[in-house]
Amino acid sequence: MTFKDRVFSGIQPSGDLHLGNYLGAIKRFVPLQESHDCIYCVVDMHAITVFQDPKKLHKSTLEVAAAYLAAGIDPKKSIIFNQSQVAEHAELAWVFNCVARMGWMSRMTQFKDKAGKNAEKASLGLFAYPALMAADILLYKATHVPVGDDQKQHLELTRDIAAKFNNDFGVEFFPITEPLIAGEAARIMSLRDGGKKMSSSDPSELSRISLTDDADKIAKKIKKAKSDPEPLPSEIAGLEGRAEAKNLVGIFAALSGRSKSDILSEFGGQGFGVFKPALAELAVAKLAPMNKEMARYLDDPKQIEDILRDGAERASVIAKETMKEVRDIIGFVK
Ligand code: TYM
Image (cartoon, rainbow, N blue to C red; front, side, top):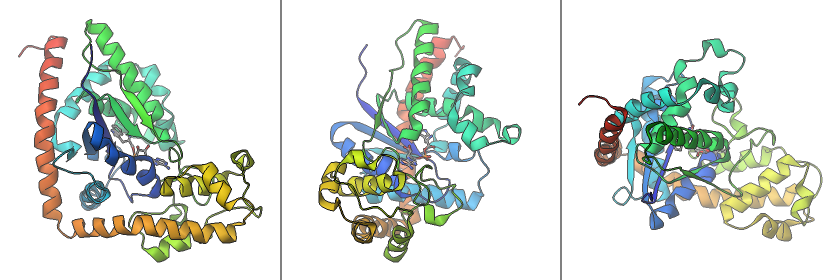
């Protein structure tokens, strides 16, 4: 069976959006609108797997939507909505809780990272989270999912769930989704530690560039970014074993749309005293317009809420159709 090409992706409204979210996800969502039907979700139900202050959740939801809009996602062409407005996400997630095996879920590294040593105290939702993510994607029978590298294992699980559902019920109902994982931007690392990914949960603000940072903050964070005393190499191979240098060159490449080797042919032999100011200038030039647009949207929350409501109505039409068929396949009495 062939499935209509459709893109789905989501971002959690659980804190500051950062450069990793932008380069690994949001920036890549925009051009896909030219070639695919796209659905971009603010996954608020994922966010509450760890406690969220209600006011902050509301604010962060609008911020993620504003970032989608500011980056250039067209709410007429694509669907932008927040997950909790389409109840079928939760309904299909339950079905997938019954399809996914405990062994599969227990292998999810993100749960282990997030729950840490205190897994007994983690919410059941945090453990079940990847089944909800599979439901997000498969509710719309999405064929392609643009994400950063950290979501790879969840997408493999989504494929396993789709295949098991199809196999258990003898149908070809769900597509086997393809992940679209970015090259240079797939894993942006912390500015303080090249061995850790950039994340909104890092206690150090200096570890990440937030999309709401102004020019001064961006420049300061890049200046303070961890590096090393060696000049940059002229070839990519020379970045091996230099995690922080590799990360900063990767960020330069992703922001400028050039390859790492191109960047190194320009900066090879130069120290960070030259490279960092050039990176700061580039980051400010690329992020300032986005920052301004986000602020403009956030000035009118009602407009964002209207866009999310309209998106949710359009998403619901597809979601209801899928769930109707899922109920039939399972044998639920109507
Ligand atoms: P989330 O909210 O943690 O991150 C949103 C997107 O940003 C990417 N990302 C990064 N990319 C590069 N470098 C980084 N340091 C970095 N940090 C984050 C993530 O890979 C992601 O693409 N489970 C998902 C949200 C989700 C989802 C979905 C995604 C829920 N349902 C369905 C796709 C399809 C998450 O927590 O992403």
